[in-house]
Length: 114
Length: 119
Image 1 (cartoon, rainbow over the protein chains, first blue to last red):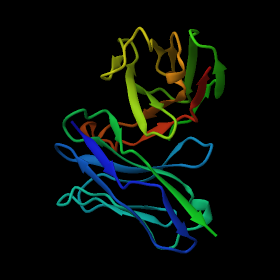
Image 2 (image 1 turned 180 degrees about the vertical axis):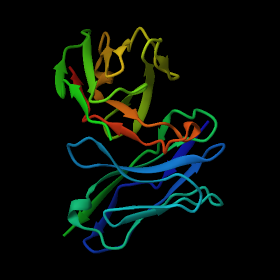
Image 3 (image 1 turned 135 degrees about the vertical axis):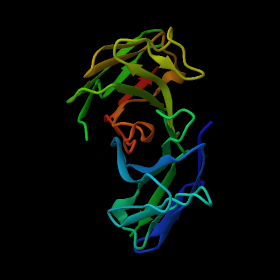
């Protein structure tokens, strides 16, 4: 079935550092890919998405590119802020098998120090 | 995007009791999903609830433990039955647009979640 593998956490960075959180997936067909963010004590929010190969999703300075050849969707940000401290989840939905289900990676806890 | 309201937002429950979580959406949706997030873990799909039919449960989840109702296109309930401390989790209701297979972009939107602590 479909699956998502994320970079192990936790990740701790200093403010203004460059961020990469790796995400790879396994799926049949052409799924949509997502990054969700969960701030402390809050619900899950959609951060960005990409629906086909070579699409780049972007929001709030974060970017991720749908790479079909490497089955990856790595999250990047050029200069992180303390307010970016949260748990980040990579997810996929669609393809062929289990098309209606949103499948999540294990999550990566990010802490940004001032 | 849809606005999703869940009740209760949190509760402390005694072992052996049952609790029903309500999910209200501000628009009509075909599919609603119930997820569980155990402490420090990712989200796991419990079941998919379609209006007018039985919920479809994922492997490891059964109707007797997690009965679901879907009486109309804007509302659903999830009951956690005969609770034990292992059921302490955040339970999240989710709805979304059409999947890619159906011509949409596939994102799901989530409620704030219901945080249950079982003593």
